[in-house]
Image (cartoon, rainbow, N blue to C red):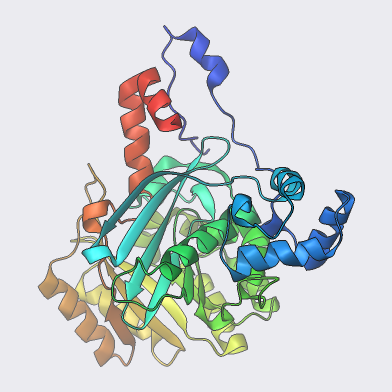
Length: 392
């Protein structure tokens, strides 16, 4: 059973019940459609088919999300197209930056009041967007802020794509310090389990990688799709013949512990999950990224490093060790640096490539779901007054 992260209504506020928003999918947006679908949509509005390419060029080519800025379109046309093809999907509630502007996190409110997050990370040679695929998450991993919220709903194709287009626009503005002014990578590692929203995530990937103006024109090889190990969906991904990177959130090499840390392991065990990941690597030639959040005295034991090394030895895989970014009130904490270094040493000694992820955004609640969790906690504490503040 999932828990909807809505703002509680107290019994002495009966009038507030009518204002509670139920999760619902957003209206149709340009990014939900391929170019043929856009042409059909604009002609049904009485506009010539070439308007579809004009809109696509503005949105995907020039990263313009506000139709009022599309001044080559007649005013009356802009009004019609806004209502039907460019509705507002994401409204920023909070934006924070750290690392001298190189890391920027945005908390969005969706049309139905659901909250999602996205992060922009700049490096000297690239700019990466980390985006959400669901509002909340139903996987219930206990060390994850999003997993503690439960699942609200899946995001639409356009809600996913619009995060990327917005962040690409931020990068193009030069706001990301010390980085190229072009977004080049997207990781589906924000809120949600991407493969639990499979059809829309795959369509979003295709939209992001189709050449402009139909899509954003990113390289498939620069897209990473993560999963906690939904084996049927992983095998379905193999058949898509995409060249995206698959990231498997493993977090434990043994079933006893992984049953606790990643509850879906109770259905698909470590061996089965790894088999699917290795089959993906064999089919695509793409190295699988094994995500492993190091948690103090939980999964950072030397024998677990050795076991993980044995499981991955000789496989097309790389271990991405993640220093845990603790969530407020959590019993989980990051492993000490000496323990982290020993874990890396043992993996490399076993012939497994291993690196420690660059830690970003601790001071801006950088871990997945932390901003949304904080907003919900604040709203719950403030009752109806907080609800009004969030809605602004």
